[in-house]
Length: 430
Ligand SMILES: *Cc1c(COP(=O)(O)O)cnc(C)c1O
Image 1: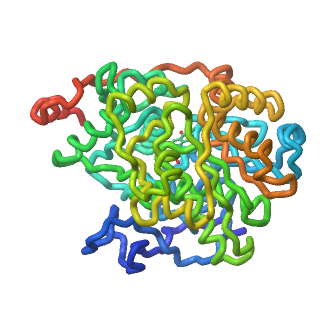
Image 2 (image 1 turned 90 degrees about the vertical axis):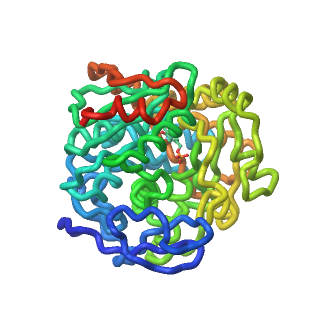
């Protein structure tokens, strides 16, 4: 174990063409390529050397595209399940937990794995960046970025649907370098994304980039690095609930890096990703064996999103078709897309709390429910090495221990506001 931290050395690469190029600071796409493709970081260190635990998430910095170290981070924690494993008759069930569970060493105060991406993305930014980072979110991403940007003095503008404001709770003050705007009640995540895209056309604002940002993906990929380094090998199965599927793409990429590393096996883990019934666009495309998302009815999708408990899984335009995206990840790993109802997810979350001892996010309930169903179906076997990615948890525990207050919006916009009105509102905000 080495403890030093220095800027990580890496190149970027187009997944489609394999062409390598340098990171100009915030490169999100391959230059001069016709077909859209995700780009990847290619790290100088082909073997992962864990750094000092005290660096939190940055102990994985060999495989994070970061130039600087931020304070306050913590890393996902992996442990071997006893209770749930026994209940399900599994011998090698490993739980990777991102959230708040101090007994296990998990100390993410925003209670989800979105914190991994927020630290990684902000660690990719220059310390003297003058522009305002713009992030659209259904809740968890906004909470994570607000915390990280507030604590590390990064200018941030959040776009969140007004109906999701209850997700923006904090135990410590959010500084005024972080601003929050909403799309009014009745709107959803897609409207917030639309607003953020509009804002990013104004000078002084720039998009975080979502799945196209290598820092976002490699931040989330630390869940797999945590699992593989704890277990000593790449798992056989990976269970995660998905909205965008970015976490699963990140898991696949981390898997590939671990294969090159050589010490953790040279196999793929099967990606077993899950969605919350009735909102199932990724499932629908996958079952139709289609690289493209299927056409959908706007009104119907809106209704479905309103019905699911795991609102963080409500992405309508996931990076599924794009080269190097979720479709390719599922094909490459012989994975599958699974489903759970609200009720199944709730029951699974209750079981988790009973057998493991911590409350989990509804999305993690979805993932756990699908694991239970696959065990019942006999798809996974008792001696398979299974990674259950608990992407969020400990919120109940956190709120029991700490006093939390809500972040109030600085402005609420109508759906699809005029750009000049947006400009007027944002003028002088930062
Ligand atoms: C965002 C989120 C997900 C879905 O993650 P993606 O990989 O982006 O689809 C799952 N669980 C929780 C708790 C989340 O916040």
